[in-house]
Structure formats: C-alpha cells, structure tokens
Length: 106
Image 1 (spheres, rainbow, N blue to C red):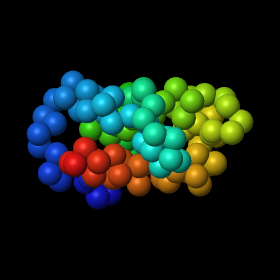
Image 2: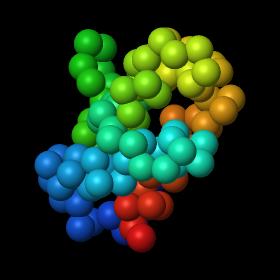
Image 3: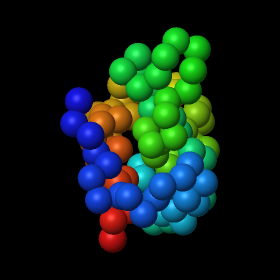
Image 4: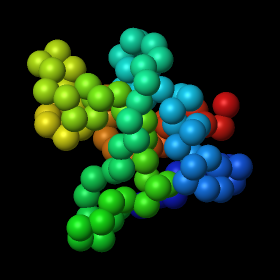
C-alpha cells in the first residue's frame, strides 16, 4: 500500500488532523459538487487499516458528513450502508484518502 502522508508533517497529532478535516468538510460532498458540509471523522474500513476490533489509525481518516458516513438516504449512499455504490460514485477508500491528504496540503 502506498503511504499517502508525504508532505503532511505539519499535522503531527490526531487533534491537528481532525481539526483540519473538519475545516475541509465532507470529501464526498466536495466531489459531488455540493460544497462544504460539516463532517464526521470516518476511520477507513478493512483489515489493512486496523487490527481486529480496533479502529484504523488516526492518519487513515477522511471527512464524511453524517449522510455519507452512515446515513440511509436513497440519493446519497453512505460508506457504511451502501459501500459498493459509495465507491462507484466517490472512489475507493484509498482514492479518497489520497484526495483528502492532497487537499490538506493546499
């Protein structure tokens, strides 16, 4: 797996990263052209990001609004409830992490 953290040394703590993610807003809403939406912090899913029963490391996080994070809205799929459609519309977790980190560098 490619490390998507090159150049993000300024975000040395979990708190700094999470504050920056909140300021950024939901990455899926940005991709969909919906503008800034107050996000939740989404820890990436899957065994490559976490040990069994543990959340992913705080560096493996992206900002998602409540609807895109775990909502059950028909028009906007969520990462938790309709992950295949979410991926088809917004990209894979790896792609969203890379895009999030790219935007953090701006």
